[in-house]
Image (cartoon, rainbow, N blue to C red):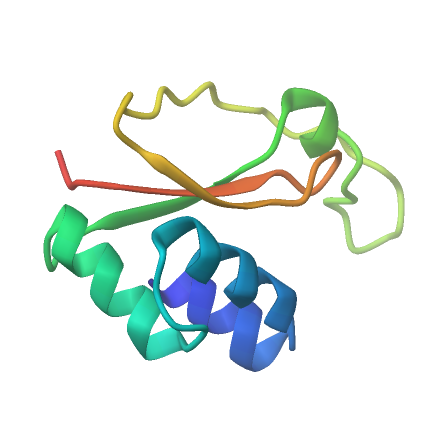
Length: 100
C-alpha cells in the first residue's frame, strides 16, 4: 500500500483516499483503507498503478527533454482485483489484489 500512502502523504491527493475509502466502505483514513485491503487480500496484498499504452507514451523518459517512447508491458490483473483509484488518461488506475 506504499503507492496509496505516497499518493496521499507525498502528493497530497486526499481525493484518492476518499474514493478508495468509499469503494471499500470504510472510514476516510489511510489506516482504515490499508487495514481493509489487508483484510480482503492478505498482509502481502499487491498494488499496481497501470496506465494504457497511449498513456505510457505521453511521458518523457530522457533527461535531455526529448520525448522517448518506452516499452509498455501488458499486465493481466486478476478478476477479483479492486480498482481503488481511476484517474483516466493518461494517468491510469490503481488496482489491488491478492499476491499470487
